Image 1 (cartoon, rainbow, N blue to C red):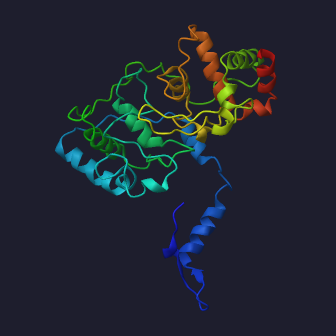
Image 2: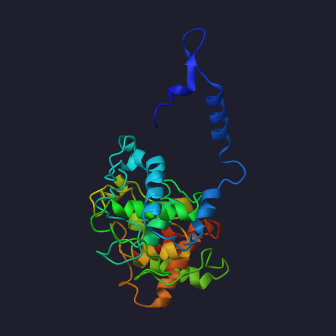
Length: 304
């Protein structure tokens, strides 16, 4: 949290006094949490629409350059290497676009990110534990321009233009964006709870699915680029799903590449089991596990 000294002026006694802007900002911050508290959770529960990309070329690159300088360079740096002026203020380093080792992508191990992966991350951000905001409010053409500009930083991605296939290779088939498990389907919930216990999910996410701190896990995780990553997330709130909290996003996390989060594709060869685990995570995501009295602790204890 940087100092915002420009929001204060010396008072009569020499002590700093808040300006009108400071008072307005405090009022806004105090208003957060009232009314539609989970507006961002609503956004992250939904798979973002991937609009058709505009024509590429120099005009689109130029637009991306302007947008990057305005919105991205302060963190990611003018050369895209993650060394922007604001980078030292962040708990976790900004992504290095030159190395292009991205955590959130649909492809398999060793594959570069798809353009839709970059577009998706720009659109929804990366949730709790990261300073990467959502730029959903930018027109889709501007977000595609940023995709093109970001790719040009990387020797292995530059010069390839923009491709936006409906389904990048290796991406799981689409799933419902919203809740997928009726609360009255006790048998399906119970099966999902069994899979949770059998796969040892609580070892990282905690017996109550609210996540564990690094000290509790006993691990210091880093991604493929050596960048440290936060401890395991809270699965009971959509904003803690850093790659998105829609059905397809949960599938990408459970059965995709697995950098810090391992892939369970091989552990669950049956499509039905994969669907049940995905739906159970969505059940936890909406906080219905606590409301329905689902005891994850008991499940872990019985498996232990």
